[in-house]
Image 1 (tube, rainbow, N blue to C red):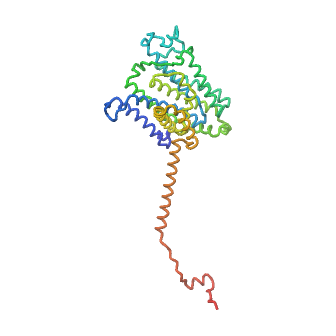
Image 2 (image 1 turned 90 degrees about the vertical axis):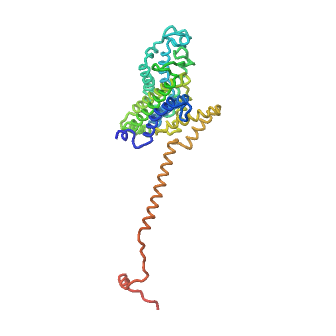
Image 3 (image 1 turned 120 degrees about the horizontal axis):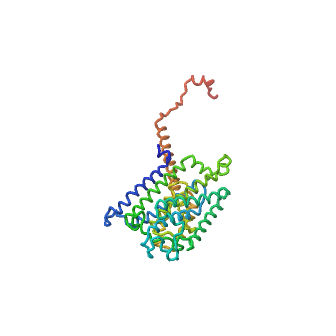
Length: 407
């Protein structure tokens, strides 16, 4: 009952959740409990790589909530991802303490190098994990709320909204590049040591981070499905399909958009926070507008408005990127652009949409063949009626006078 209520009749969502939860258990076991000589052994670099892909999948799912279900094409979700990553990076930097290059127990190495005399006020509290976790949620969410409040109440829609989200991302990119901002400038934050007291480079820690990413993504799938299957989800789609009519019926479309945009930004921030300890660095490059455009491509390739599609798209595209950049790195961007154009022209509903169309056609053909077989069987089972050429006199008398032979 509960599963049917929140997940609906789409079994793919339940299958995705179960697959992620199974991966959260099986992958660490195959990495930690299996001998490296075994064929089932998963190397640590694969664990870290797939863990990074899961963070990307969570980011794509966040975009799908606003683009696929609310019709808001955001080209700035990379900013929310990066802000969540910086919040986690600040916590990890505070855990280094006196083990840094300069041995300062309070100031991170880049601050000592830049002649900082004291810790900036906005770094206070990041020596506690709970505070950093709170900032991972609050900073992207607050930025999205303030940005959305002005944008949606000003009735900014369509390509204009996409442009200003990209402008927001670029403005943050320029700001975080500055050394005097207190976030490490061009080099960003790196050289992490511990997370919650565990060595961030240890295999067990990497496996734990992978499991955390998989479980978080599964939870995000459940929450997103619960939102879009609810009455509020129907309102999201009404705003997407007919915003003017929704307003005419008395709904505040700007509030609906603001809710979806804020929740989506928080999800993106969580993805960034899980991403940073697995890759070991966060720098202003994460604010690059091209990164936000890549997220749009992942979502389009998988199929927007499907929940499962963005996850599939993120995994497929990034796996292809890892292979392509190793074989033909200079052609990767051309391949990515060509992929987006091909999907837009040939697969407007993405991979998952193509699969749905194929299944619908297969079901229609199967139903037609079954109906034809049933019709043929029915005709074969009915007795054939043989009409006799001889007629009785009574039959002619009932129909009229008996015909006379011609003279």
